[in-house]
Image (cartoon, rainbow, N blue to C red; front, side):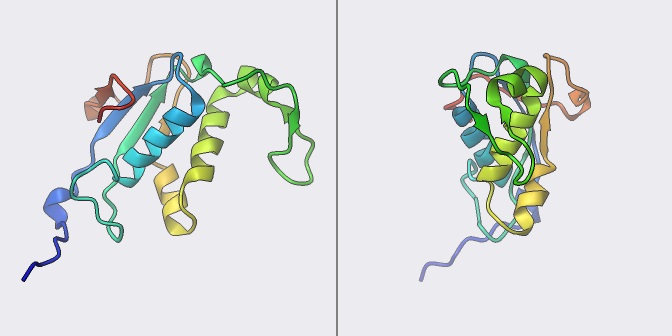
Length: 141
């Protein structure tokens, strides 16, 4: 009889990953970082356990969007919208955070997983003591 494998605390070591956003598309970065945040990239993933890792996104200002969008978007109902182009120039890390936060599952894991996401402008970040692993290609983990 086969038994279901449930990972124990030995499997729950959190790693830190660095993803460079330079010349990358927003959707691809978001989908990769969600897989790492929730732990779905691991072979011993279990949905009822917290198996996710930390993600550091650098060079947020060099993010490329699919097309030049000049329409106004309403991010918060009741507040005036802003052009996505102006928002990229002013707060590029805010766009990435909102996109990833919107793609996370609802409930308690959403806020818990969003705390593990660190977004920085430029190539410097203060997490060198955690020995982050750099993801060279977006398809490899």
